[in-house]
Image 1 (cartoon, rainbow, N blue to C red):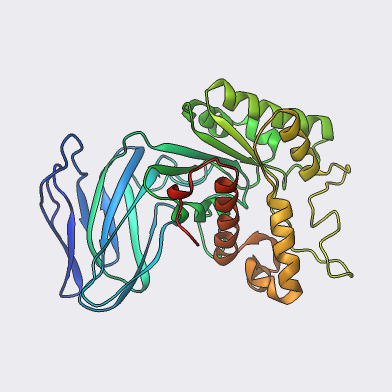
Image 2 (image 1 turned 30 degrees about the horizontal axis):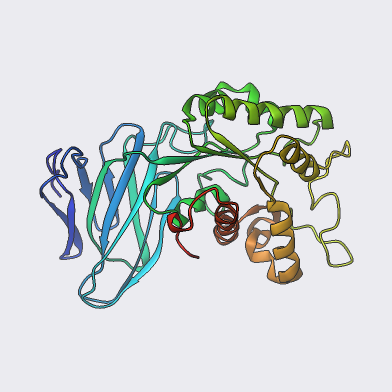
Length: 347
């Protein structure tokens, strides 16, 4: 596999079981990045930033291709192509250091894409610096973050696959964080606040780890996050936490454990809703949406959303559950006119 020149389109064609790259003309003013591809992955030598990626999928045989990138982020859902068909898809990706959780490993430099699907066929890849992309920055905990290893997955890790070119997800959620610890750590809130640009969305879901945070402090911390985003010209969006899969004897989630009421009696979702109303902040009530879904699936049917079978874990989601919950977030972003309907992919 040879490296193409910096001002070249990386065109990857399937030949003898491997991908080969050949040079092509660069787009005016936006030279595509230097890249290498194998049959299962592509790497591009780019610095941290926001990049548009255009891929051409399909081959002589019927194919089903998906793409993930960086720390296990789902960037393009499984896409079917008929024999001889070629389909172009584009998306925008955030490249950063660390590439996953803010307190996690630095990761590898540049942009890494992984080619997946039951019968993958990638014909061409092009990566260029994004122009005028809008960011969706995520502030959250382990139910949101880019989880480094299977079977764990956060809904923020699955959200990019639902967005088209021009919208990037910058997931700065981190495992174990509360509102207290997130605000106190320069790697968390200090970094996010500097990155917010006018017009960016900042989705905040912090509650699972505020087990010892009293009500006034929890509310004040949420208000601090809201004010900080607005000072930078961004648009804060408060998100109530995903439920824990903790059924009561009545077959519902109507209990403090499931609905994130801490040991001090602080009803986290209720406080988030109150701050959203008082500060005129858009609200995504993910507690209500996930509660309704989990209860509708029942005790057995809801197990696949979480890591119940794998880890006896009813807090953290599986890749399937995270994908479903990311779809709920996408629907709410559109319903509340936070992103245009044409900017998202259907589920």
